[in-house]
Length: 91
Image (cartoon, rainbow, N blue to C red; front, top):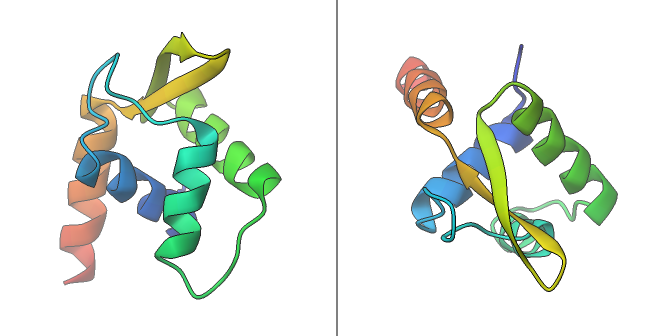
C-alpha cells in the first residue's frame, strides 16, 4: 500500500506522542487535533478517520482499549519500520 503524506504525519504523531502500545494510544480526535496543530491545512475529522483506518487495515497502526467508547490507536512495529524507511528515503 502506498501511504500519503498525511498518513506519514499520523504515524509520526503516534510515535512522537508515545502511542506505541495498547493503553498508551490516542483517540481519533486527539490525532486530528495534533495533525491540525502541526499543519498549514485543516483536515476534517472524517478525513483523519479514513486515513487512520486505512493504516489500521495494513497493520501500521492498531487499536485496543476503549476509553469512553473511543478506540485508542497506536503505532505498530510494522508502522515504525515503514515510517523510518520513508523518512530516510526523503533525506
